[in-house]
Length: 435
Image 1: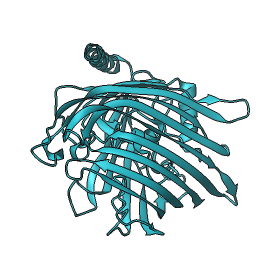
Image 2: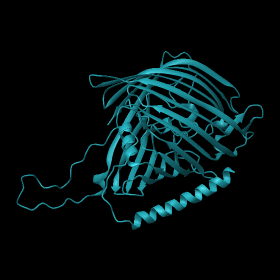
Image 3: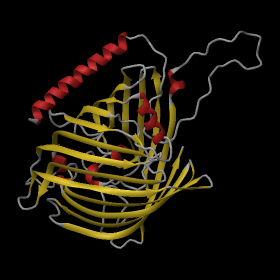
């Protein structure tokens, strides 16, 4: 059933792309009426016109300034530096979210992002984001440069309510997955929804629809202190490879994803955003993921559905997401990978305190996950119980300091280590600067 539906959706999506190209190439150029909403928080500074005549020079008539593509590209970014070994109770405790947790961990540049973005045409917006602090799988050398995002938005109308996003970008599955790490109060994303799309991104084509009124609301939420995710549409429908970002496609089956979400302004001034999302496809466990020749890889069904609810902090905020589904998972009894069910979610509360032009945000988060981690060794089984509470302090727009105390209980099973349960506590600190 899923296969026939997906074939129709993929056929429709490709037809939409050809129609979009036809509309774009045959329509007269319209004046730009709205800027594409960026998914991070800091707006790029305005850029002065180049080669403009001096204000006091009247010897020559003023001429129109020619616009170049490089005048339209803005640069911004952020860097996160962490230390996780304070008050550590179990050095054997590890996490796939942060390689510096546990034994032999020290200071770590978790992210070093540069964002190049801008409207290079009235209908075309580009977004390229490399990370300068990546570590390839299996490497002991850190701080490699690697592409995170490389896409363009093709607006299908002059208001930019309808658009196609083509390239490597975030997949619209889960509010916290789409929310930038620059905005998130907790240091890491939840396991339950992040295991659906590790690194949050993949290569494909996604159609988004956002009414102009809601585009402005998404912009306000993302470019303020309300920890928004950016504009991923009131409705999104797309196709993508399904092997996650920066990995080659390994089968002839594209994933299909859909999401509906709507930010609702309440009479008391607060904003809530309920949403629902899901995807279906086949994930290939490749030979480089296997612990031995005895464990067999191959193609496995990969399907999930999730619900989201967000109350934006004004000053109290609350987030809750939960997903269920099925996917590849290591089975200890048969020493093999099977398609098995999974489940999990999280709840998070926060409160924003503003004083002397500074922001102080205490928060608490609890999460649970049980299922397979499809991109890890043997699609290892994982069970997570974790509680976090902490404080984020932002004295100015360019600097943030977050402290977080984590109480965690993690169990994994794979062909190399049939049973590994670790639990403990640790205090984590992160310094972040924005530019």
